[in-house]
Amino acid sequence: MNEFLGQYGGLALVLLGAAIAVFMSGMGSAKGVGIVGQAAAGLLAEDPSKFGKVLILEVLPGTQGLYGFLAAILLLNTSGVLGGDAEIITIGQGIMYFASCLPIAIVGYFSAIMQAKTAASGVAIVAKKPDDSTKAIILAAMVETYAVLALLVSLLAMISVSKFAA
Image 1 (cartoon, rainbow, N blue to C red):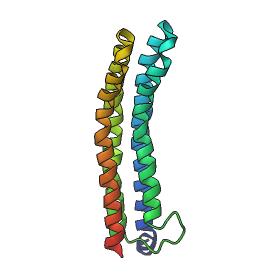
Image 2: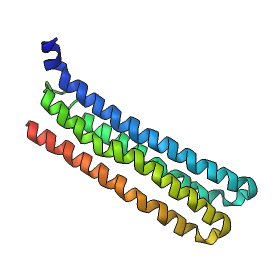
Image 3: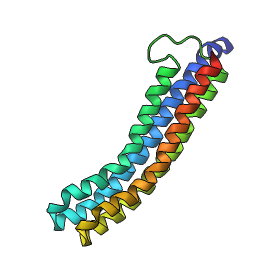
Image 4: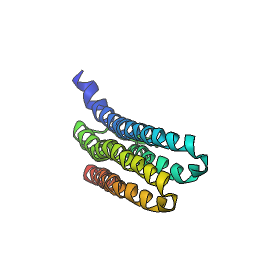
């Protein structure tokens, strides 16, 4: 068992880190897009001509899921798993790679939901003042900043682990 963990434990942690990055940020985005979709559907039932304006608000919480996917792909590439040329990844390296996924996984989940709540409120702005839709988009986009920062931290950590491992 110890030999198995020594040979494949690090790899398992890399795969788990990639999965966590995708699952957490993806779940947040799915929930977020649903929240805004519900608000938008109410408005569109009354005024279908505002579809284009609320569609932008609907899409915004979905970006965190894309960031988690990007982090997972870059992790698999950086660790050598994706190209199939991975050497043995130690447990220590695996833990560091796993930890590098946590910023985008956690912040991606929560920021998608918070962005959705802001965007859903933006749908109310569009309902009453359609010309102010840009303001609603900017308010929702501000939440995106923290998901981008979390992605950056995750990517920098992954690169650091690969340099540390070399």
